[in-house]
Image (cartoon, rainbow, N blue to C red; front, side, top):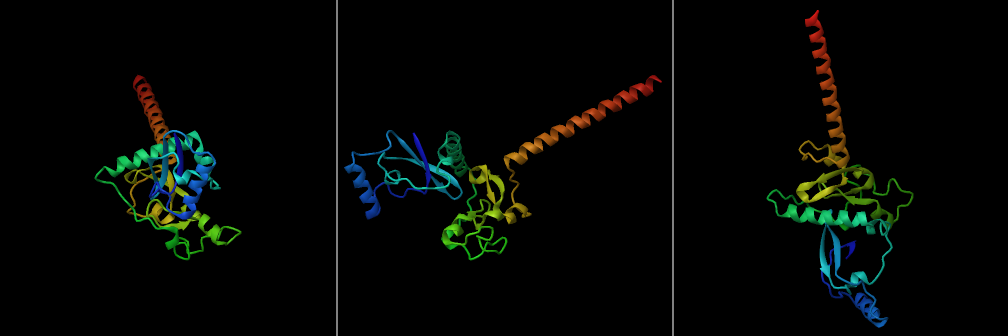
Length: 217
């Protein structure tokens, strides 16, 4: 099945005259479409969900240039997307499911709420398009922040976010923030714990050897 990461499809039928025209054009050229059952994945508040759509779903009748268009269509990306869909659906069934208030880009303030600078402060261009490219949503609080202020990543299992995702500096350092760690931090902690256990074991063995030696003397 084909997997496409995009916005949530609200209606499988053409919603605008332009889309309807594209659909008719596809029919006129011999009915070009994606064969088989199509699984359409879309973003929902920092995570993903999916649904089956008909093979001539209008969103699949055009190609949109995007900087992640190749990266999002690899086997690894497909697997990650399906894992996120599964995690979100399982999390939504639990009593401790946590939903953040997701802020749309169009409602963002004039400046980043973390650093108080304009969103394009680290870019050479300050166009409207660049402004949107330099925005992202913090997965911890849902606010729109600049990408530099969301360089840290965390997982949020209670929200169904199991792959480390951008988190703003305020959420990273907030005292009452839930303990959410990235995969890299978790592996590092495990490795550190194993090293400390090995050192403690070696110290205990040295102490035993010294005590045995003293007893023999």
